[in-house]
Amino acid sequence: MKNPIEVLRIKEQELLKVKREVEALRITARLLGAEQSVPDSEDTPNLRHRVEMP
Image 1 (cartoon, one colour):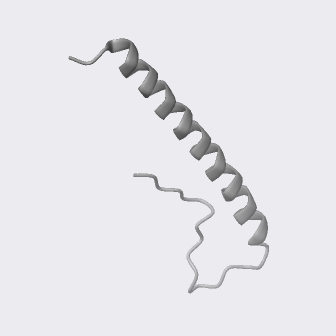
Image 2 (cartoon, one colour; image 1 turned 90 degrees about the vertical axis):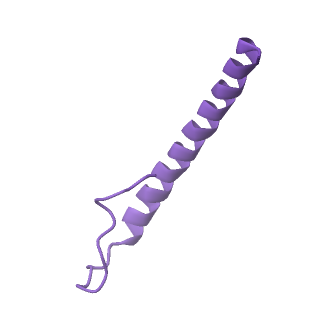
Protein backbone atom coordinates (compact mmCIF):
# COMPACT_ATOMS: atom_id res chain seq x y z
CA MET A 1 0.00 0.00 0.00
CA LYS A 2 1.24 3.47 -0.87
CA ASN A 3 1.98 6.03 1.78
CA PRO A 4 -0.87 8.61 1.66
CA ILE A 5 1.51 11.45 2.50
CA GLU A 6 3.76 10.54 -0.44
CA VAL A 7 0.77 10.28 -2.80
CA LEU A 8 -0.42 13.71 -1.65
CA ARG A 9 3.03 15.21 -2.22
CA ILE A 10 3.16 13.77 -5.74
CA LYS A 11 -0.33 15.05 -6.56
CA GLU A 12 0.57 18.52 -5.28
CA GLN A 13 3.64 18.55 -7.53
CA GLU A 14 1.51 17.48 -10.51
CA LEU A 15 -0.99 20.24 -9.71
CA LEU A 16 1.76 22.87 -9.64
CA LYS A 17 3.04 21.63 -13.00
CA VAL A 18 -0.42 21.90 -14.55
CA LYS A 19 -0.88 25.41 -13.12
CA ARG A 20 2.42 26.48 -14.73
CA GLU A 21 1.37 24.93 -18.05
CA VAL A 22 -1.99 26.71 -17.97
CA GLU A 23 -0.30 30.04 -17.26
CA ALA A 24 2.11 29.45 -20.16
CA LEU A 25 -0.84 28.70 -22.45
CA ARG A 26 -2.59 31.89 -21.34
CA ILE A 27 0.50 33.94 -22.15
CA THR A 28 0.83 32.20 -25.52
CA ALA A 29 -2.84 32.82 -26.32
CA ARG A 30 -2.45 36.54 -25.55
CA LEU A 31 0.64 36.74 -27.74
CA LEU A 32 -1.07 34.94 -30.60
CA GLY A 33 -4.08 37.23 -30.26
CA ALA A 34 -1.82 40.26 -30.57
CA GLU A 35 -0.16 38.84 -33.69
CA GLN A 36 -3.48 38.34 -35.45
CA SER A 37 -4.03 42.01 -36.21
CA VAL A 38 -4.28 41.08 -39.90
CA PRO A 39 -7.91 40.38 -40.90
CA ASP A 40 -8.69 36.66 -41.11
CA SER A 41 -9.37 35.20 -44.52
CA GLU A 42 -12.18 32.70 -45.07
CA ASP A 43 -9.59 29.92 -45.50
CA THR A 44 -8.06 30.46 -42.06
CA PRO A 45 -10.10 29.39 -39.03
CA ASN A 46 -10.39 31.92 -36.24
CA LEU A 47 -8.73 30.17 -33.29
CA ARG A 48 -8.81 33.10 -30.91
CA HIS A 49 -12.27 32.28 -29.60
CA ARG A 50 -11.96 28.54 -29.06
CA VAL A 51 -9.43 26.68 -27.00
CA GLU A 52 -9.94 22.95 -26.60
CA MET A 53 -8.06 20.97 -23.99
CA PRO A 54 -7.99 17.18 -23.68
